[in-house]
Length: 450
Image (tube, rainbow, N blue to C red; front, top):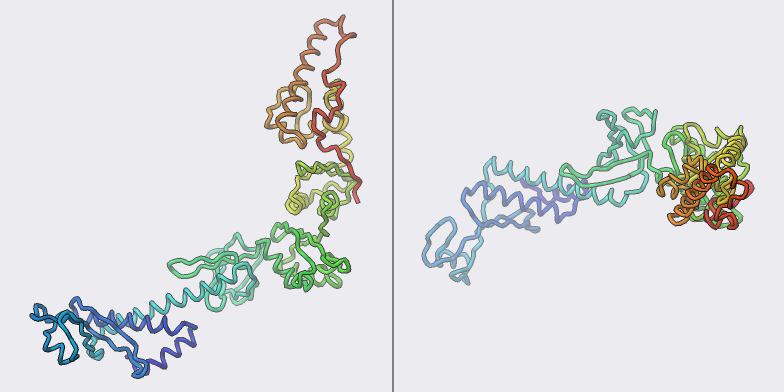
């Protein structure tokens, strides 16, 4: 069974890439298992590979005693000295077992142990190898389908491409070669489980890194990515070399580089945006291809109000809101888009709604109206949590404004009940105070779009 064992070990080491120590350990464990099944009683067994003989030697150890109680596990001192002249009572003497006497069942058990040990070693090797590939892009060949899940052959093992990690409307057939992102790898009872993805944002980053030398060389940096897989993506880039245009490098000659990536992603549209620390310019660029008329920025709240011509509104928002959603994800800012007509209507309605309430300025009135607070009464009744959602408001100034609104309404009611005094009514308490002192300057900075 174990003839030419050394050659078998070398072949296993070469073909399976399994360390010789692991193979020998498996064989030795198998021989111990076979010996125990063959001997039938509880014996102390050891196995050791003899390099010179090219075989595994198996020894049964017996205790040296003066009076033998169990012949299975004990030896007399005379028997022991016949094997080892230096033997003493209390020693343990190893007696070599003839492995040829192992029965068929014992040999089969040994074989199973070897196969199991080698299988476990293979799994561990694959796990360690792919653990280093986590976050990388690899190629796989479609082997089979399990429902909507695709099983890919990755060479030494298989990977799983779940439905949630597949691009919409993408169809593969058995034998297709597919580029995938190694998203996760974990060890299970059945071996390493490798989860693959084509929807992960990092997959897009890796594709650009592969396709654009300036990125792989560190000259061009990818600053942010936002993606709706299979539909549209936005990627912000900047250059560390003022002589290299980051966007141009990613687009490539006649758009070749980006088109290769679009093709890989089954037609997913990709907007490449020049990153800039100027938030207004960055967000305007992120909303491309829409043209922007004006923006109002609240740096503290990371909120921006964007005004666009009427014919650019649908373009800025995008189909099903995708364009503005991706722009918000890319920049990390909350973006509120209004058309010029819409803004004009809001201004008129807001001025009408808060007419006579001098505690707030026109801009704050428009902001409150845009957040659903459409009268002085609604302002007085608004929960603090609702007001705090309005850019520029915190708990303190929100409460202050609510109190002023309540006082204003009380005075108005009092004036209505005593019309003869209406001509001499006192102004709001905040009338001599700048509105921004109450409203903490919510979104009051404007910049022309570039």
